[in-house]
Amino acid sequence: MNSLLLIPVAGTVFLAVQLFIFIVHLIRSPLKSVPGPFLARFSDLWYFWAVRKGRFEQQNRELHQKYGSVVRCGPNRYSINDPDATKIIYGLGTQFAKSSWYSTWGAPGQWTIFSDESIKHHSQTRRLYQAIYSMTALVNYEPYVDECNTLFTQRLAEMAQAAVPIDMGHWFQCYAFDVIGMITYSKRLGFLDRGDDVGGVMGALDGHLKYATLTGIFPSLHRPLYAIRNYLAGAKGAGRAYVLGFTKQRIREHQTTPKAVSETPESSTTMLDFLSKFLAKHSDDPDTFTSYHVLAGCSANMFAGSDTTAISLSAVLYYLLKNPGCMQKLRDEIKSCEEQGSLSELPTFQESQQMPYLQAIIKETLRMHPATGLPLERVVPEGGTTIAGYYFPEGTVVGINTWVEHRDPRYFGNDADAFRPERWLDEDSQKISVMNRHWMPFGLGSRSCIGRHVSMLEISKLVPRLIRDFEFSLQGSENWKTEGLWFVKPKGFKVRVEVRKYSRSG
Ligand code: HEM
Image 1 (spheres, rainbow, N blue to C red):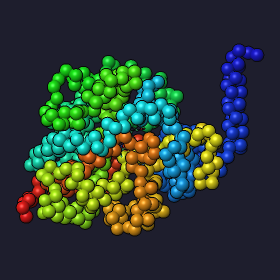
Image 2 (tube, rainbow, N blue to C red):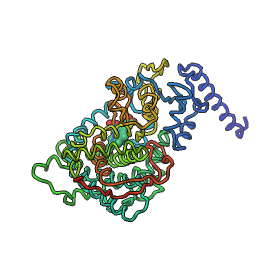
Image 3 (cartoon, protein in one colour):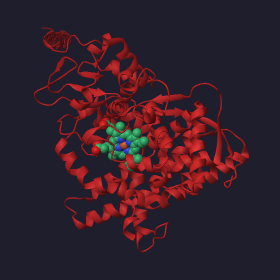
Image 4 (tube, protein in one colour):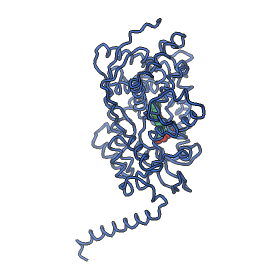
C-alpha cells in the first residue's frame, strides 16, 4: 500500500475500534439509562465547559431538577441527589476513595492531605495531624485571633472615615490569611497591615484554584501541564509551586526569627504555633513525620485556610445585609449578652457558643453558601454499589454537591431557598436531626474538613464584634455576583462601613 495512505487508514481503523469499544460499553453499561446532557455521554469536555462557566453550583441544582436523583456529568461521572447517598458514599468505614480529579491539587507524584487517593495512606497521615486541629487545641490560639480581629477593626474604622465603598471579600481574605499566618507561624503575613496581596500569594492561589479545578477533569494532563506552567512562570514557579516556595520561605523565617507574640509560661506549649508543633513531631520521629509532612501541614493551611473562611465570612455579612430582620435579631442578642455581662470587649469563643441566634446564623449561612461548589467526587469500590435504584460498577465516579444537598426541600422544607436561621432553633428535634444529616459544608466522613475548627473559631469570634461595632450597607440592591470553580467566591462584594454610634452602657 502507498505509504502516504497508511496514516489516514491507520487513523480511521483506530477511530473505528474506539467507536466500537465505546458502543459496546454503552450497550452493556448498567448506567446507560442515566439521564443528563447529551454530550456528557461521550466526553468529559461537557463537564469541563460547564465548570469553566463559573456557576456549576447552580447548574448542578438545575440538572437535578430536570433529570432527577442521578445525573450524568461525563462518560463515567455522576452527580447524586438521593436521601441514602450521603451514608453510602461518605459514611464512616466506607471504601470510596477520592477520585483522580483531586490529584491536580498536589504536585505530580506528591501526596497532600486533601488530594490523597489512597484510603490507607490518607488515614495514616491524617492521624498524625488530627490532634493539632482539634477545637481543644485551637481555643488556645484565641489571643492570635484577637490580635488580627483588633487590627481588622482598626482598618475598618479607618475605611469608615474615608467613606468609600470597600471590597469586603478582599478584606476578609486578608483577615483570614493573617489569622492562618499567626496560627501556623505565630507571625502575621502582613495582609491586614498592607491591605494588598503580600508577595503575590493570593494571585498564585487563585491561579492554582483555576488550574486544579479544570485540569482535574483530565488528570492525565496534570504532569505535562504542571511542568509547562512552572517553566513558563520562571524561577518562582506558578500556582502551587509558587505557594510552596512562599511557605518554605515562611518556614525559614520562622526558624531564624523570634515569635511575634510573647508567651506566658503556662501557654508556652499550648500556644505553640502549628509549625513548631510540626517541627517537634519531626524531631521526635523523623521517619514517620518527615520534613515533607512539615511542609505539607503548613501548605495545607495556606491552600485551604484563607479562601474558605473569607467566603464564609462574606456570606454571613451578605445574608445579614439582605435580611435586616435577622441582623436586628442578632444585634438584640448581642445587646442582651452585653447587658448580662456575657460578651467581652474581645468576644471569646466560649461566649459565642452561648449565643444561639449567632450560631444559627453561621449554620444557615454555611447551608445557603457552602464554600465548595462541585460534587465531592469519590470512586465506587470493588463490588460496586446501588444508589437510587442504579447499579454503579467499581471504578465509577460519583459525588454529591453540597449546593444540591443543602437546597433540597426534602431535608430543609419548602423554604429551602430562603435564608431562615430560625429553622435551626424552632423546628422539632426530628426535623433538625434530618437537616443535620444533610448539612455538609465541611464534607462528611473520613475526608471531612480537618480545618473546620480554625474557621469556626474565627467566624464565631469576629462576627459578633463586627456587628456590635460597625454598621454595614450593601452597595447596590442587586444580588451579589459570585464565581464558582471549586470555591464559590464573591466577586466585588462592595459595602460601605460606618463605626456604630453605640454606647456600651446603654
Ligand atoms: C468555612 C471554612 C471551610 C470550609 C467550608 C471547608 C470545606 C471543606 C470541605 C467541603 C472539605 C472536604 C472536601 C471533599 O470531601 O472533597 C474540606 C477538606 C479539607 N479542608 Fe476545609 N474548609 C474550610 C476551612 C478550612 C481551613 C481553615 C483549613 C486549614 C486550616 C482547611 C483544610 C482542609 C483540609 C486539609 C482538607 C482535606 C481533609 C482530608 O482529606 O482529610 N479547611 N474542607
